[in-house]
Length: 235
Image 1 (cartoon, rainbow, N blue to C red):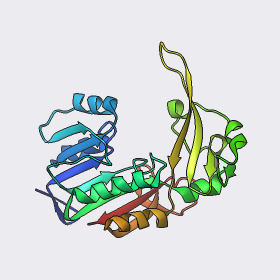
Image 2: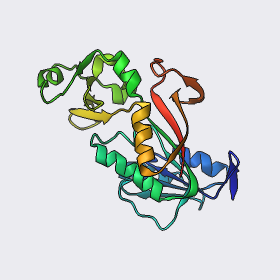
Image 3: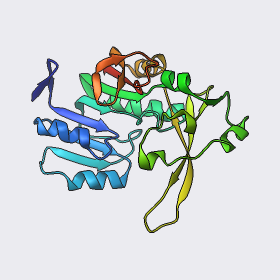
């Protein structure tokens, strides 16, 4: 048993753990950890880096996974909630995290900031299906392969009715044909994501607009660096 912010923590579960970088940091400090991700590639990479029995990874769907254990601390960071554009899918992730927390367990979550997105958007329409020409004319980019800056207003289209962002991403695969994909993600206002958490039963302890890697510095909602909204919640 370890303490974090005055709370006893015996288990940390990362929902949408990616390659496991957050889990490994907690494991270094002696916490029992479990990472869940839908990507087989991510899970296989994470497992290849494991050197302690306290570090575990499983491939599963964060919306529906059912574990025989609960966490004192849950992580769900960056675009896990928001990777689906359907509201029910994203709510299902939050509801499932709530089920897997012990009483008084804590959640640290971040989502992509709609308020910044809206303030910088160069291209936006009320409804994409009714304005397909805007999507057709959207410039493609290689952002995901090169920089990861998915807030570049030259390369995204915001659907104002839903908060969904559309991008055209080009990928050059070694030894394979290049490809272009239309990619969507859901972004949130602070009120919207807090309402979803409270619907699941969470109590909101703190929210702040942050830059990745600088969570200690609270920013304004439209600060160019405030690409994420960070939420601390409790069951």
